Image (cartoon, rainbow, N blue to C red):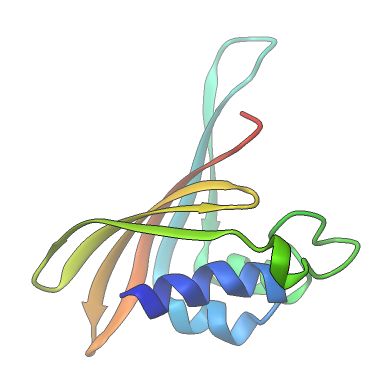
Length: 123
């Protein structure tokens, strides 16, 4: 499980789409809930597995990712396994961009991330 989570986090810093693809279930949904400060109304923005893989390959992810790859010394990859039961688990991560709550399942014998709920540090 931890290797899968590290693939997810580290691929955002290193722009290695193959690692992101390896970590994700094809039906992944990554969501962020945000509130419009002008209206006070909440909305949900959602990423699919394919969009997340494409964005990582294009250089999205981690702090300062659009101008350069994040140096290894600046790559935060804190992982806390919150719960695990048989072939499923829940993990909390903290990275340079914020916090992620990951739902994982064992799929064809490998841990895969099925769902992600996340929040920026700045929110």
